[in-house]
Image 1: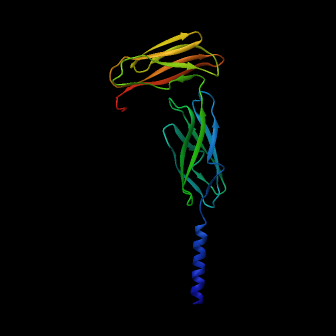
Image 2: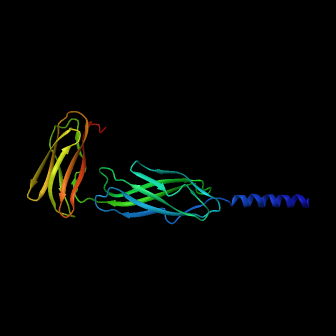
Image 3: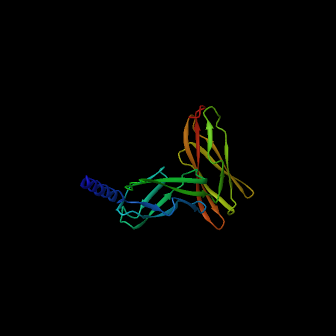
Length: 223
């Protein structure tokens, strides 16, 4: 009986010792706010972590929640006590503006927390504000002009020297009244279509900036 008890005790201790040998991914922070410059083409954030376990940590997958968000690690394997960095990159899509929150899912062989979500927060702004952000005609609507107004609080608009349809679905005309610019857009196609209006602007003390505004016709049901 005494020997049996000793064996059980030693076996339990061995299992306990094995159980604590594991990787442990510990981040300094899993949520970061990044200040974006106007018209930023991409926003990046670095998330620092450490393998706080006593076993090698392996990064299995890095998955952005959408095609505009990606992530990469400086390595795939991290020894116990070793530090690393996950870099998250967000490339704004056409029409993205204002407050943005993007997530990336990190999968590792950390037995306790195999999945970690990283959050990148930012606020998008533009040198030129375009209103509305998209032009929409209904299928039953006549081919009437719709207007894109241009304004800027970050620099004077000196010229709108190029405004064109990218797919030929609309006719585009630039109009200027005093120091103000607007772009008039009218469909050239009947039925449902999708297009973009590309607008190139010269801004004082900034230079040339290019913007795109979606322009499309949808069915009356909204599809």
